Image (tube, rainbow, N blue to C red; front, side, top):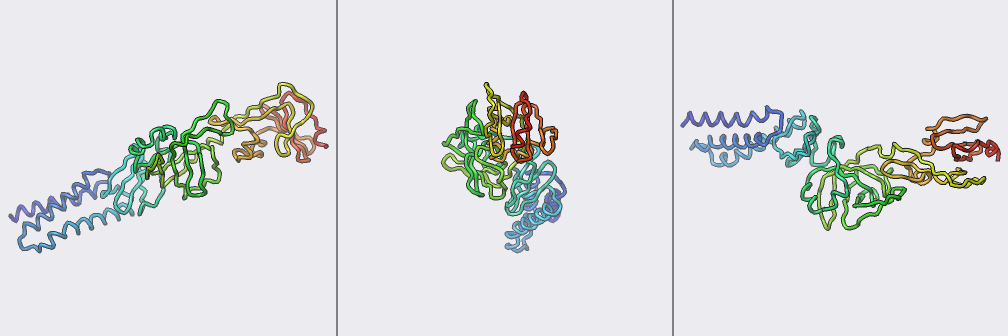
Length: 338
């Protein structure tokens, strides 16, 4: 009996130690520790002189010790945890959930999150994108599929509630819609907690991409928490389209503040995803007039400048008046003398 107890003790000790020597996640490591604790407890059960209270509390003590070692090892050395259950997003991102903490695995980098406070710390581009129209087409079904998982969603903002939440809804847009306008479907919505994000540059009808944890579902409303806004370049790249008047007259008309146009009906900024009127894009903060001006080559005429672009010209006068001209027009510098 003594020899068998020694064998059981050695096997139990090995099962308890080996999982800490392996730096990868496996549910079998947790099972090995559990089996090791049982075998060590059996050794004391076989000893008739052992205090019954020690037999009862030994497994609890060993669980506390091994959990503490695992916690310290994970936190200090950023190694793969054991006392966790894996939530695998894809081959690049996994989230390990434990009782008091969770660990994000971003590719091969482990990021510790004590008390579940940290927002999504991985590169958002590691997660595949879901379109808001697809997510909210069947909200109950998709909530059940993604519940307690991190997802990345792209769509248009339908409402901003201060600095606390914003909302995304299904939408559709017509072929001739401009300035980001779409028609929203009010039957369902995605509510996004943005308390830890800066959203000053976002407005209703803007495209946005958000990574967050699917937390709850109520009355066709899915809620995301622990969110992170993906920094994309949707509004950094654009083309300029100029619509000239079918019949040009000699008069200049006010296009926007201190900017006058002649023979030009409108100027559009084409972002690919949306088309904006130039004046609206400037008012909406999508583009700054200085940014647009600096993209052109210019010629100086005393203190006046003529900027040239592919589709139009801009005469910037020293008297702070500016003239948007078609490329077919001659330059009248006397405009800058008025």
